[in-house]
Every structure is written in structure tokens, then in C-alpha cells.
Image 1 (tube, rainbow over the protein chains, first blue to last red):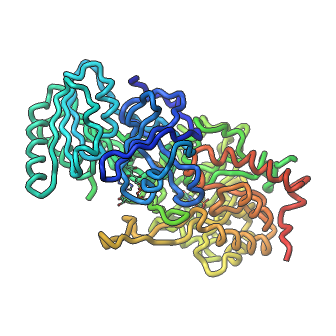
Image 2: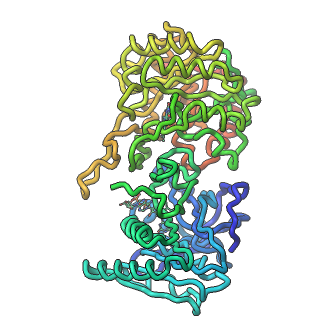
Amino acid sequence: MKQLNNHESRTCVRTMVRMVTPAGSDGFISLYLDLPEWDYTPGQFVMIRPENWDNDPVWPRPFSICEVNRNGLRLFIQVVGRGTRLISRLTPGSRVDLWGPLGNGFKFDPDDRLLILAGGMGIAPFIGLCKNHPHPEKVSLLFGHRVGIECYPLDELPQGMDKQYARQEGQSDLVLFQEMLEKRIQEFSGLGRILACGPTPLLRVVSSLSLKYKAETYVSLENKMACGVGACLGCVARTSDQGYVQTCTHGPVFRADRIVWEV
Amino acid sequence: MDISVKLGMLKLKNPIMTASGTFGYGLEFKPYGRLEDLGAVVVKGLSLEPRQGNPMPRIVETPCGMLNAIGLQNIGVEAFLKEKLGLLPWKTTPVIVNLYGQTREDFARLADILSREQGVAALEVNISCPNVREGGIQFGQDPVQAARVTEVVKKSAGSKPVIIKLSPNVSDVTVIARAVESAGADAISLINTLGGMAVDIYTRKPCLANKFGGLSGPAIKPVALKMVHEVCKKVSLPVIGLGGISSARDVLEFILVGASAVQVGTATFTRPDRVFSLVSEVEKLAMELGLDSWNDFQGTLKN
Ligand SMILES: Cc1cc2nc3c(=O)[nH]c(=O)nc-3n(C[C@H](O)[C@H](O)[C@H](O)COP(=O)(O)OP(=O)(O)OC[C@H]3O[C@@H](n4cnc5c(N)ncnc54)[C@H](O)[C@@H]3O)c2cc1C
Ligand SMILES: Cc1cc2nc3c(=O)[nH]c(=O)nc-3n(C[C@H](O)[C@H](O)[C@H](O)COP(=O)(O)O)c2cc1C
Ligand code: FES
């Protein structure tokens, strides 16, 4: 894991699917692709568009770089709609257009303590981060999930890491989870950095709790993207200091206190 | 074969330009291709002052296309000239500035500012944006208004060529085309996006915060091709065709019906180097067809 944000290394290539492995029973997959010569920062993402999409779907799809290992570039994907369904049917040898690494990624000092708050697929960018972190004992993870825990690649995470998992099935679980979040954010404020990724409602709560406890928190946003390179202005987020900025190039990671959450 | 084209006073290495709003300020694409290889770079629509644009969500995918309601977010003309233009290879590739105003005076002032810039090869006047409440489209839907905007821009633009970009959201686009031709336009580009809408039956809300948006992408190509064909028959100005172009074949189709050049918009999103690869694909296809020059082919559609 290198902490780089090197625009020069950005490329667009046609690459090959090496492997598609189903995870759990809920349409989660790991997609492994041939990797160009890339360094990346965890939290950066790629745009992919299978060759056979032709004119429909038109847009590519953005996915966090989950990790890079001996099987190639790994994306961890939840099937939620048409594009991800088509992606889940790719087979080894299928060709895919791939561009990246995109966005800014999570910046942190490996010696500092980290609290990771992940919800559902928000775990994806943290898999590689945790597996490659030089001091797993400095990393804490609070993971909230709705579907079965076996769907997520959590058993791959380092032994020495502090991990807490919470399943949300009903309203009472959600309240419990929010209490856990509040406690962790309050305790952690001032000790290190908080990194969060997950559905917007989660990030909104994390953001307001971070403001309340003055915690240094970074959130990774998941806006709809068409180009991924800052050109279409379709993916913007509203920030307090710069107005609307492109999530794909100014983010996806933002300081939580800079985001103006829109209803 | 030589695939260069002449667009009035502008000479392009090839007929392939980028479409405004889909190529940012050009610099976004430097990692993905050589801007020098393009026929011309058309940048995001600029206004006098920076604009924030519309609230989110502003884009939604549709079958073979997309709707956008960006609302002309841009950094403003001054910031573009100071921060972006100098970094573009304008000495080797024409940089065309797309502009938008809320009043005729805005259009005139923009043209005046841009007329002094050596790096600006031509102006493309957007009188066809469906996504902003003030100005924009009303200039493009009425031949009298369209002609008056063309006149004021021409007057302020000095020696810079003026391209008027037309809206397809009219009953007869050739009437507007003829009006801007008589008002002194140097070229016409068409089409801008078609008004459209998408709704969500689960939330029972429109998919765009702005409710309506502009449809672009392969879905609109037949509409664009027809309008370009009709306009080419009615005016003697060079016409730049666009709307759903995503392949070399699409490019040649527009040239066949009479366009002098084309712009590539939404297809840029399918791969950031798409517009660059199209250049060589068009050259290859022209050779396969055994063409000696564009003159042999342009506007030669048979009945
Ligand atoms: C920077 C970034 C990183 C991402 N990383 C991952 C990842 O590692 N793994 C992963 O599974 N997903 C990730 N996503 C979300 C992923 O891009 C979307 O789930 C995917 O594009 C949906 O495509 P679709 O065609 O299946 O859905 P569509 O058919 O387009 O839509 C189906 C449903 O999915 C929802 N949806 C669509 N696009 C998004 C989106 N961008 N974010 C959230 N929900 C969306 C829609 O609300 C809709 O209800 C990331 C998104 C971004 C912006
Ligand atoms: C995201 C987006 C932003 C656009 N912004 C502008 C703009 O600022 N000015 C303009 O004249 N046209 C704008 N357009 C219209 C395009 O330039 C083009 O006319 C239209 O998309 C049709 O071409 P296409 O189907 O190849 O995309 C925009 C289109 C899109 C998709
Ligand atoms: S996705 Fe186009 S600007 Fe971010």
C-alpha cells in the first residue's frame, strides 16, 4: 500500500477479468481484473465498463479499489441494479474498460490511530487498507451491516485489529447502532482519525456526531458518476468552503465538517 | 487520406471535436490522450460570473442515453482565461469557447472579452440550454431572438468566428438556422439536448432535482441526423453535427448528410479516451470506403 495521489499514473486500458467469485448468498461478488502499473491510495476508485455494453448501459460504474493481491485488482461489488447484475455475469477472459486510479483516497499517517466506520459495501475500500496496514493494533473497526456477515470478506482482516460488528435488522438495531457510533466517536475524538464509508444516511449521522464531538473525520461519498474524471459535473457534493465540487476529483473523500448535506 | 476539414476560417486536422459540457475544460483529459490530435476542443459553457448550477441529483441514465440538468455550473470566463486556457495546446489545436448569457448584453460582453484572447479560436454560442430558468433556451426557440443574439455576438466578437448552437426543442429547426445565417453566423452546430424526464415509481419523485433534463447519447442520434440533414439543405453555412455520435460510422453518417465536422459528447463518458481513438477510426473507415477527400463524400446522400 503506497500513499500516492499521482495523476500521471492515471490511465485507461482495456483489461481482462481473471476471476469472479461469489460471496455469501446476497449477490455480493469479488471481481478480479488484470491490473495496469498502478499505485493507489485506499479510498481511490476505478471506473469500469465491460466491452460488451456497447451503447447500453451508457455509463461506466465506479467501484472502490478493494485491494491488489496476487489475483489482480480486486473489486468487491454488491449487485443492486442493472449494471452490477451484468457485471456479476462476467466470466474469466471477459474484457473490461478500466480507468483510474481516481479520486483522492484516504490520507493518514501509518503511526496514527484510526477508527474505521463502515456500513455495508462501505467496507470495500478498507479491506486492502486493513490488510496492508503496518500497525493493525492501531486500527479499530466498527462495521454495521444488514445482510449476513458471511457475505463480507471480514475473516481476511488482520488478527490484532480491534473489530466490532453490528447487524441491523429492525428499527431498534438502528438505534443501538447509532448509540455505538456515538460512543466510539466520542471516545476517539482527539486520539486519531476517523474514516467512514457507507450509505449516505450513515455518513450523515457520522458527520453530525463528529461535529458534536469535534472529531477529525473523513467520509467517502458515493454519488452517481458518469465520467469519473471531473468533466460532466454530474457527481457534485456541496461543501461549505468551495460550493459544489466534483466528488470524483475533489473526493470521494472529504472532511466531514466541510460537507453540506442536502435533503 | 487527408482527413482535415475547413470550417469557414477554421482549419481542423480532422472533423472530430469535443462537445461542450462533456469534456470539462479539456485539461481533465490530458492523462488519456493528446489534445493536439483532436480537430478542436470545445470547452464547458462559460458565463460572465461563475455559476453553481442546479441541486443534486443532476444526472440520470436512460436506455442508450442520459438526462442531465447540470444548470451550467462553470468557473466563469475570467477564471477560465486565467487558469485553464494557457494550459491548453491552443497553438496546435483550436480551442472553441462555448458561452451562455442570461441577457443579450451578457452574450455581447462575453464575446467582447473572448474576442481579445489569442488562444480562443472561435465562439460557440449556446442559445439552447434547456436546464436553466433564465435566458438560454428562449433565445433559441424564436427566430427573431436567435437572430438578435447572433447579431450582438458577431458585433462584439471581432474577427473570431461565431458558431451558433441550436436546440432541437423547436417545431422547425431550419427556420432558426436560416435566421442565424442571415444574422451573420459563421457556422451552426446542432443538436443540443432534447427535453426529457425520468421518474421513480418507488419514491414517486422525478429522478432529477430539476424535474426535467436534457437527453443525450445514442438514443438521440436519429433525431440529430434528421435535423442536421434538414439544416444542411437549407443553409450554406458549415454545419457541425452532433447528438449520440459514438462510432466512426456515426461520424461518417453525419458527414454524408452534409455536416462539415462533428462533436462527440456523451460517448466521452464511456471511455475517457473515446474521442481520441475515434480520430484514427474515422481515418481508417474513410480509407476502407476508398474516399479520396471529404468533398467526394460530404452531403452526397442519395435519394
Ligand atoms: C467512489 C465510489 C465507490 C464505490 N465503490 C463501490 C464498491 O466498492 N462496491 C460496490 O458494490 N459499490 C460501490 N459503489 C456504488 C456503485 O457504483 C453502484 O452500486 C453501482 O454503480 C450501481 O450500478 P447499477 O447499474 O447496478 O445500479 P442502477 O441500476 O444504476 O441503480 C440501481 C440502484 O442502485 C443505486 N445506485 C446507483 N448508483 C449508485 C451509486 N453510485 N451509489 C449508491 N447507490 C447507487 C440506485 O439508487 C438505484 O436504486 C461506489 C460508488 C462510488 C461513487
Ligand atoms: C453533462 C452535459 C453537460 C452539457 N453542457 C453543455 C454546455 O455547457 N453547453 C452546451 O452548449 N451544451 C452542453 N451539453 C450538450 C452537449 O454539448 C451536446 O449537445 C449533447 O449532449 C448531444 O450530444 P451527445 O449525444 O453526443 O452527448 C451538455 C451535455 C451533457 C451530457
Ligand atoms: S463523474 Fe463526471 S464530474 Fe464526477
